[in-house]
Length: 241
Image (cartoon, rainbow, N blue to C red; front, top):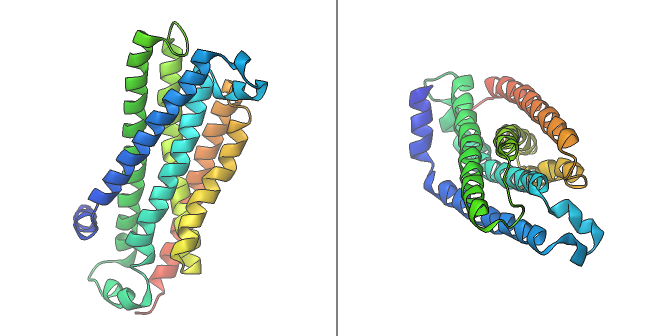
């Protein structure tokens, strides 16, 4: 398995996905300070609906779900290269003739993309929160103090949404695999997390409710990911070259 993972990393240019992750981080940097600025100037100067954009808890919810959508989309794009394209007719013949179990080859591809998605999102988001928390202790855009509970919640929600992005990426890949369509994979990678994100964003200040929803969403995405992966492995096992 380790050798196959290394082979996948060599065969596919992972550098471009790292660049994409950095771009996502830059966008999230801009967005987190835009939200902080709204808190700084005060919601009383704007429509009351803007209260869902202000405060530490709202900022964490917004950054988490937007990152989840972005990294799920990135995961779907990676799966189009690692899986969908690989199992098209012109490449499938070579792939299915490898002297390795088909399940192991497929699983190695899933492992590379899943680990890259989750780990990169965790690193990027925690780095963003680290820089933001340091700047908050200097400039106080949102509040005069940054409670340790907020930092702990940021770490917890980041881990939950990162795993969710990994799970939903597999779901998007499964849809694209069944339809044998690259566009369907990417569209699913955008729409699936965006659909669930709306539930969080309409009540961004509801910390307890949102955190519980993040947990449920993570469990749901991972269960769906396991079910879809299992079904696809069975399908690949009976494929003819």
